[in-house]
Length: 248
Image 1 (tube, helix red, strand yellow):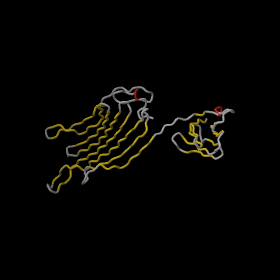
Image 2: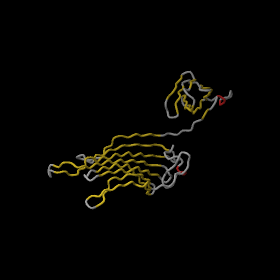
Image 3: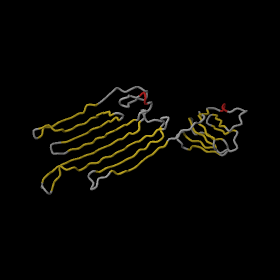
Image 4: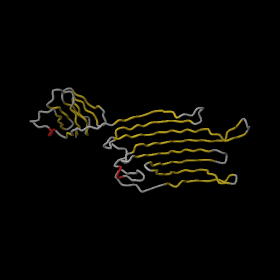
C-alpha cells in the first residue's frame, strides 16, 4: 500500500497521477487574480486570489491564496499551503497542510482617541501526515497529527491537538476459491469453500472466525463451518491456520 500509486509512472516533477496511469500536463501556476485600488498616490491590492505551485528538489508545494483589503485599513488573509515531500524511491514521506487566517481591522484606540488598524485574528492550523516504508517499499505506518497556534494569545504556543496512527502488517496467505481445493488424500487441515459456506477439514479444533480484509470480525463458529454474510474476499482463521478465501 502506497499513498502515491505507481510512483514511477507519475509526473516526475510534480508528483501528479491519474487513476488510469496517465501523466497530468505539466502546470507550474494558475494565474493569480489581482485587483488594485488607488490610495495616497499609490496602487494597493484590493484582492488577490488563486493558486501558486513550486518545486524544490523532492518537495512539491501548492499554495491557495485569498487576500482582501480596502481603504479603511481592513485586511484579511486566508492561505492554505500543501507541501508534499518524497524520498529517493518516489514514496511520499510527508504530506503537510498549513492553514493561516489573519484579520486586521480599524478599531478605536483609547490612547489616541482615534481609529487604528489592529490585528484581531492570527490563527495557524497545521496538519502533517507522515509515512514510513519497509525495505520492499510497502507502507508500514502513517501518522496524522494536528496543531493549532493562536498568535494573539498572551503566550503564543504551538498546541498539539491530536494524533492518529495506522500500522500496516503484511503476511503470506493462501487464497482458496472453491471446494475443489480439497482432495480425499489430503490429511492436512484445510479450508473448503462452497458458495458462501466455509468448512474446516482435517482439523481437531472446530472453532473458526471470519474477518473482512480490513480486519472486521463478521462471523464465528464452533462446529467447523460458517457462512460469509456477502460475496467477496475474507480472511478465515482456525487456531494457527489462516487463509484468504473468495466466496461467490
